[in-house]
Image (cartoon, rainbow, N blue to C red; front, side, top):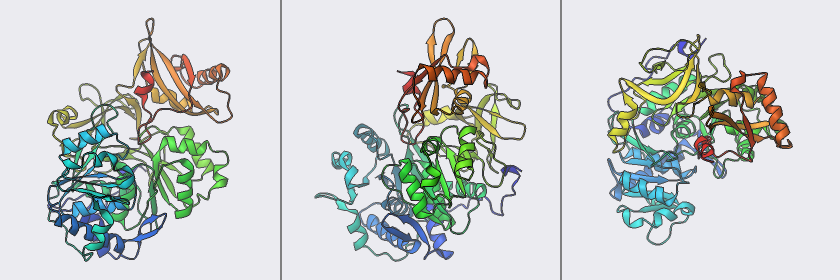
Length: 525
């Protein structure tokens, strides 16, 4: 049975005309009796729903008293911390517009986002406040700093302590009004401001709940920063809406720290990227060093999770890894989950109400197994409203009734989708179309390979040679002999024309803040 065969419950993805995202995720959970439950598990102790609501209401009143109100853009420069959901929900509750950007962005990128979003205020942590302190004169409604405000700044903790924490009704917003902006990390150019509406929480919250039904006592952890919409949904907003617990893991997301958090907080559902799962499995005896028995399932997104990694994780850790596919302009589009058979290497099937197709250049359906363009019907209520101040860029990706992902994919006869790669990552060698993902999947089946990336190496004779950049497992001797052994192993597993001409070794692959391999950085070397 596929998830598309699962009957959605009554009211599934029905969007009311009036909707406030903060009221939907927090106030409704309180009304259903979630108050005494743990909303967030942190290193310093639990935060109940009641306590969270009190902080949100106090901050909302304080912000309103400073002139921040309906439609006011406010930059949030926070890493994962308890202050994040308080600031985010307080702003939305009063109708303001949170502007999310990654906390690692450089000063020049902060400068751009400030100007592009026209943020009137900013909320940050003392340890990462420097770029905003240098631009404080551009924030007419103030710089609000948690854990270390200095003269000329507003103390985040003081604002909350001095304000009334009593229940506060959310501003009456329309479901289709802007709720928040998410700025991309800008790895391929200037960051884009992606505008999401209040309706997003129902359209995507219902779909995610259907894919992985909530169980009493669930504890969720996502390893990405909450400035990215996937982690924001899976670690913060969806757990709150479902009345369960999210884990706040501060600091760097190193494998050992993630595993310690799973053990300490008894995480039941983990959301991460394929790179993290590979790095965990590269730790000798990891399944004996940490108690991971609380995990009932894990999720992978952002890049392909090959069948070899899935099988090893299942064997050693004891639970499935459900792969899913999403984009910043929506969040999750396709996926696998506990309600359907897992097909390792597949990104799953579309969830009910989400129309996804593999089409050729003429918008004709591709045959099963045939690679084509992955397109999503653009009338989906989970979609973004557009790119902030950039109608031309919006029109580039949304036209003819479709959102154009830029990904190539195929679909098998049972409706499971398989990513072939980005359209600009695929290349030809000897006139034959090369899909990096397929070769990378085969490479990672070699016992000495932890990670691998396939890129083109320009060649006058054959157009491009196939270049493999490999991270070897600890203890393996990364030399020419291993490279030739890897090539020999691949000859028995994939077509000869797909075997890399060159195998190079590196200590680590370049990655974006969300853990995606930066393929272009390798091509440019």
